[in-house]
Length: 261
Ligand code: MG
View (spheres, protein in one colour):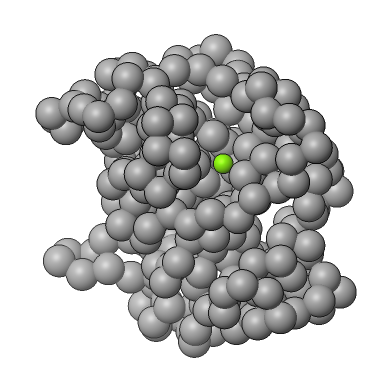
Protein backbone atom coordinates (compact mmCIF):
# COMPACT_ATOMS: atom_id res chain seq x y z
CA UNK A 1 0.00 0.00 0.00
CA UNK A 2 0.97 3.60 -0.54
CA UNK A 3 -0.04 6.13 2.11
CA UNK A 4 -0.15 9.90 1.56
CA UNK A 5 -1.18 12.91 3.63
CA UNK A 6 -2.71 15.96 2.00
CA UNK A 7 -4.43 19.28 2.52
CA UNK A 8 -8.17 19.36 2.18
CA UNK A 9 -9.68 22.79 2.66
CA UNK A 10 -8.27 24.11 5.91
CA UNK A 11 -7.77 20.59 7.23
CA UNK A 12 -5.47 17.64 6.60
CA UNK A 13 -6.26 14.04 5.74
CA UNK A 14 -4.43 10.78 5.22
CA UNK A 15 -5.12 8.82 2.05
CA UNK A 16 -4.57 5.50 0.28
CA UNK A 17 -2.86 6.06 -3.11
CA UNK A 18 -3.84 3.60 -5.84
CA UNK A 19 -2.62 4.53 -9.32
CA UNK A 20 -3.30 8.27 -9.51
CA UNK A 21 -6.32 8.12 -7.21
CA UNK A 22 -6.32 8.91 -3.49
CA UNK A 23 -9.01 7.50 -1.18
CA UNK A 24 -9.26 9.58 2.02
CA UNK A 25 -8.81 7.63 5.24
CA UNK A 26 -10.32 8.07 8.70
CA UNK A 27 -7.54 9.15 11.05
CA UNK A 28 -3.86 8.29 10.91
CA UNK A 29 -3.36 4.78 9.44
CA UNK A 30 -0.19 4.30 11.49
CA UNK A 31 -2.37 4.33 14.61
CA UNK A 32 -5.80 3.32 13.42
CA UNK A 33 -5.47 1.09 10.37
CA UNK A 34 -6.89 1.59 6.89
CA UNK A 35 -10.47 2.86 7.03
CA UNK A 36 -11.77 4.51 3.81
CA UNK A 37 -13.66 7.73 4.52
CA UNK A 38 -14.96 9.23 1.32
CA UNK A 39 -14.77 9.17 -2.47
CA UNK A 40 -11.40 8.98 -4.25
CA UNK A 41 -9.84 12.14 -5.68
CA UNK A 42 -7.12 12.62 -8.30
CA UNK A 43 -3.58 12.86 -6.90
CA UNK A 44 -2.68 15.82 -9.11
CA UNK A 45 -5.53 17.85 -7.59
CA UNK A 46 -4.05 17.53 -4.09
CA UNK A 47 -1.33 19.38 -2.22
CA UNK A 48 0.73 16.64 -0.61
CA UNK A 49 2.05 17.04 2.93
CA UNK A 50 4.90 15.06 4.48
CA UNK A 51 3.35 11.61 5.19
CA UNK A 52 4.71 11.47 8.73
CA UNK A 53 4.00 13.12 12.10
CA UNK A 54 6.89 11.76 14.18
CA UNK A 55 7.44 12.37 17.89
CA UNK A 56 11.13 11.99 17.05
CA UNK A 57 13.42 11.45 14.08
CA UNK A 58 16.25 9.04 14.83
CA UNK A 59 19.14 9.09 12.36
CA UNK A 60 22.21 6.96 11.72
CA UNK A 61 25.42 8.64 10.64
CA UNK A 62 28.41 6.92 9.01
CA UNK A 63 26.26 3.98 7.86
CA UNK A 64 27.74 3.69 4.34
CA UNK A 65 31.49 3.26 3.89
CA UNK A 66 31.36 5.29 0.68
CA UNK A 67 30.19 8.35 2.65
CA UNK A 68 32.65 7.75 5.51
CA UNK A 69 35.42 7.81 2.90
CA UNK A 70 34.33 10.96 1.10
CA UNK A 71 33.97 12.80 4.44
CA UNK A 72 37.54 11.90 5.39
CA UNK A 73 36.44 10.11 8.56
CA UNK A 74 38.46 7.26 10.08
CA UNK A 75 37.26 3.98 8.58
CA UNK A 76 37.07 2.27 11.96
CA UNK A 77 34.59 4.80 13.41
CA UNK A 78 31.31 3.04 14.15
CA UNK A 79 27.94 4.28 12.89
CA UNK A 80 26.50 6.92 15.24
CA UNK A 81 22.94 7.78 16.34
CA UNK A 82 21.64 11.35 16.39
CA UNK A 83 18.28 13.15 16.33
CA UNK A 84 16.64 15.68 14.07
CA UNK A 85 13.69 17.69 15.43
CA UNK A 86 10.20 17.08 13.99
CA UNK A 87 10.10 20.83 13.22
CA UNK A 88 12.61 20.20 10.41
CA UNK A 89 10.13 18.12 8.38
CA UNK A 90 8.85 19.46 5.05
CA UNK A 91 6.98 17.81 2.16
CA UNK A 92 7.97 17.12 -1.40
CA UNK A 93 7.60 20.38 -3.29
CA UNK A 94 8.41 22.52 -0.25
CA UNK A 95 11.53 24.67 -0.15
CA UNK A 96 14.76 23.88 1.69
CA UNK A 97 15.84 27.15 3.27
CA UNK A 98 19.54 27.97 3.46
CA UNK A 99 20.40 29.36 6.91
CA UNK A 100 22.46 32.53 7.13
CA UNK A 101 24.77 30.83 9.65
CA UNK A 102 26.16 28.34 7.08
CA UNK A 103 28.09 28.64 3.86
CA UNK A 104 28.12 24.90 3.01
CA UNK A 105 24.79 23.05 2.99
CA UNK A 106 24.58 19.61 1.34
CA UNK A 107 21.75 17.10 0.80
CA UNK A 108 21.89 13.47 2.01
CA UNK A 109 19.49 11.02 0.32
CA UNK A 110 18.25 8.38 2.77
CA UNK A 111 15.78 5.56 3.11
CA UNK A 112 13.58 6.19 6.16
CA UNK A 113 11.69 3.58 8.17
CA UNK A 114 8.29 4.45 9.69
CA UNK A 115 7.61 2.70 12.99
CA UNK A 116 4.20 1.02 13.25
CA UNK A 117 4.35 -0.59 16.68
CA UNK A 118 6.02 0.63 19.87
CA UNK A 119 9.55 -0.73 20.17
CA UNK A 120 11.77 -0.83 23.25
CA UNK A 121 14.80 -3.11 23.51
CA UNK A 122 13.74 -5.24 20.55
CA UNK A 123 16.19 -7.70 19.02
CA UNK A 124 17.14 -7.55 15.33
CA UNK A 125 15.06 -10.69 14.74
CA UNK A 126 11.96 -8.94 16.17
CA UNK A 127 12.66 -5.52 14.72
CA UNK A 128 10.92 -5.72 11.35
CA UNK A 129 7.64 -6.60 13.08
CA UNK A 130 7.64 -2.99 14.32
CA UNK A 131 7.83 -1.41 10.84
CA UNK A 132 4.82 0.30 9.27
CA UNK A 133 6.54 1.23 6.01
CA UNK A 134 9.28 3.05 4.13
CA UNK A 135 9.64 6.57 2.74
CA UNK A 136 12.35 8.74 1.19
CA UNK A 137 14.04 11.45 3.25
CA UNK A 138 16.77 14.05 2.90
CA UNK A 139 19.11 14.57 5.88
CA UNK A 140 20.07 18.12 4.85
CA UNK A 141 23.34 19.02 6.57
CA UNK A 142 25.33 22.23 7.14
CA UNK A 143 28.86 20.79 6.87
CA UNK A 144 30.66 23.82 8.25
CA UNK A 145 28.48 23.82 11.38
CA UNK A 146 29.05 20.07 11.92
CA UNK A 147 32.75 20.90 12.21
CA UNK A 148 32.37 24.17 14.11
CA UNK A 149 30.01 22.73 16.74
CA UNK A 150 31.63 19.32 17.16
CA UNK A 151 28.13 17.81 17.23
CA UNK A 152 25.26 17.86 14.79
CA UNK A 153 22.11 19.26 16.45
CA UNK A 154 22.32 22.68 14.82
CA UNK A 155 23.97 21.51 11.59
CA UNK A 156 21.18 19.03 10.84
CA UNK A 157 18.30 20.54 12.79
CA UNK A 158 17.32 23.74 11.00
CA UNK A 159 13.71 24.16 9.91
CA UNK A 160 13.25 22.59 6.42
CA UNK A 161 16.30 20.30 6.86
CA UNK A 162 14.24 17.09 6.74
CA UNK A 163 12.22 16.69 3.52
CA UNK A 164 10.12 13.47 3.70
CA UNK A 165 7.87 11.94 1.04
CA UNK A 166 6.11 11.68 -1.31
CA UNK A 167 4.41 8.59 0.16
CA UNK A 168 4.89 5.73 2.63
CA UNK A 169 5.22 2.33 0.94
CA UNK A 170 4.19 -0.42 3.33
CA UNK A 171 6.08 -3.24 1.52
CA UNK A 172 9.48 -2.84 -0.11
CA UNK A 173 11.93 -5.28 -1.72
CA UNK A 174 14.93 -4.32 0.37
CA UNK A 175 17.20 -6.72 -1.47
CA UNK A 176 16.93 -4.90 -4.78
CA UNK A 177 16.50 -1.31 -3.62
CA UNK A 178 18.90 1.40 -4.85
CA UNK A 179 18.96 4.95 -3.55
CA UNK A 180 19.47 7.65 -6.16
CA UNK A 181 19.84 11.43 -6.12
CA UNK A 182 20.34 14.12 -8.74
CA UNK A 183 20.89 17.83 -8.16
CA UNK A 184 19.99 20.10 -11.08
CA UNK A 185 19.63 16.92 -13.17
CA UNK A 186 23.26 15.92 -12.52
CA UNK A 187 23.51 12.39 -11.03
CA UNK A 188 25.10 12.52 -7.57
CA UNK A 189 24.20 9.27 -5.77
CA UNK A 190 23.41 5.74 -6.96
CA UNK A 191 24.02 2.99 -4.40
CA UNK A 192 22.36 -0.23 -3.23
CA UNK A 193 20.90 0.02 0.27
CA UNK A 194 22.48 -3.40 0.82
CA UNK A 195 25.74 -1.49 1.34
CA UNK A 196 24.51 -0.25 4.75
CA UNK A 197 26.89 -1.13 7.59
CA UNK A 198 23.98 -1.59 10.05
CA UNK A 199 20.95 -3.02 8.27
CA UNK A 200 17.42 -1.89 9.01
CA UNK A 201 16.75 -4.53 11.67
CA UNK A 202 20.03 -3.69 13.43
CA UNK A 203 19.25 0.05 13.32
CA UNK A 204 15.83 -0.48 14.90
CA UNK A 205 17.33 -2.74 17.57
CA UNK A 206 20.08 -0.21 18.35
CA UNK A 207 17.73 2.79 18.41
CA UNK A 208 15.21 0.93 20.58
CA UNK A 209 17.94 0.21 23.12
CA UNK A 210 18.14 3.99 23.69
CA UNK A 211 14.73 5.46 22.82
CA UNK A 212 11.24 4.06 23.08
CA UNK A 213 10.19 4.13 19.43
CA UNK A 214 6.56 5.18 19.07
CA UNK A 215 4.23 4.50 16.13
CA UNK A 216 4.84 7.24 13.58
CA UNK A 217 8.47 7.84 14.58
CA UNK A 218 10.91 7.67 11.69
CA UNK A 219 14.46 6.36 11.43
CA UNK A 220 16.76 7.76 8.75
CA UNK A 221 19.14 4.97 7.78
CA UNK A 222 22.13 6.94 6.52
CA UNK A 223 23.44 8.42 3.31
CA UNK A 224 25.71 6.85 0.67
CA UNK A 225 28.40 8.85 -1.12
CA UNK A 226 27.56 11.88 -3.21
CA UNK A 227 28.50 15.39 -2.12
CA UNK A 228 27.28 18.57 -3.78
CA UNK A 229 26.81 22.04 -2.26
CA UNK A 230 23.31 23.51 -2.45
CA UNK A 231 22.76 27.03 -3.70
CA UNK A 232 19.65 29.13 -4.13
CA UNK A 233 17.59 27.55 -6.88
CA UNK A 234 19.17 24.07 -6.67
CA UNK A 235 16.66 21.31 -7.44
CA UNK A 236 17.23 18.15 -5.34
CA UNK A 237 15.58 14.94 -6.57
CA UNK A 238 15.82 11.71 -4.56
CA UNK A 239 14.21 8.52 -5.79
CA UNK A 240 13.94 4.77 -5.33
CA UNK A 241 11.80 2.13 -7.05
CA UNK A 242 8.31 1.99 -5.46
CA UNK A 243 8.96 5.07 -3.29
CA UNK A 244 8.45 7.78 -5.91
CA UNK A 245 10.44 11.00 -6.17
CA UNK A 246 11.15 13.43 -3.32
CA UNK A 247 11.83 16.82 -4.94
CA UNK A 248 12.71 20.09 -3.22
CA UNK A 249 13.99 23.42 -4.49
CA UNK A 250 16.44 25.43 -2.40
CA UNK A 251 15.43 28.93 -1.31
CA UNK A 252 17.80 31.68 -0.21
CA UNK A 253 18.58 32.98 3.26
CA UNK A 254 15.59 35.30 3.26
CA UNK A 255 13.33 32.30 2.77
CA UNK A 256 11.61 33.73 -0.24
CA UNK A 257 9.68 31.18 -2.16
CA UNK A 258 11.05 30.38 -5.60
CA UNK A 259 8.87 29.44 -8.52
CA UNK A 260 8.95 25.68 -9.12
CA UNK A 261 9.18 24.82 -12.81
MG1 MG B 1 22.61 11.40 7.13
